[in-house]
Amino acid sequence: MPATQPSKKLRALCHEHHMEMRVNQSLLSNEGDVIRTLTYVCTEPDCPVHYNTSRGYFMLSQNGNVEDQDMVPRVRCPHDGTPMYLGEIGVEKRDFRLWRCPQCEASRSNEEGLVGSQPSQTL
Image (cartoon, helix red, strand yellow):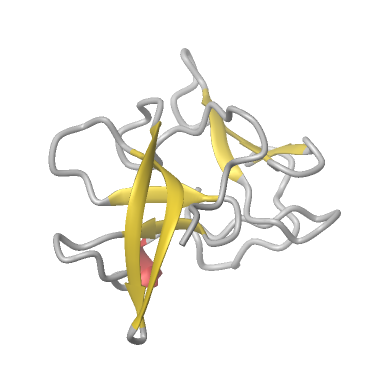
């Protein structure tokens, strides 16, 4: 089965370590189905954080199962509903987050208020 290709090179950052993620081919298992896909993975050793444009951020266990999704940001583009990725953090203002859409290239920051994010979510 062919892997899905990212449409372009993204500079997605890990939401935990704020490091640039790298593209990696992964086998994902969810509800018994195994899918080969290209995902962005954190470069920090043993970090389970992954991102892809269809699912958004998710955690992957050692055996390839998608873990509890309550631990990851759920930021969606207000224009097309695509899961956004963390594209930039503040250097001097550490709590600043800039989220980008991989489809329409829209961006939103946590200072503007994110449309479509869950109210209980901390960005």
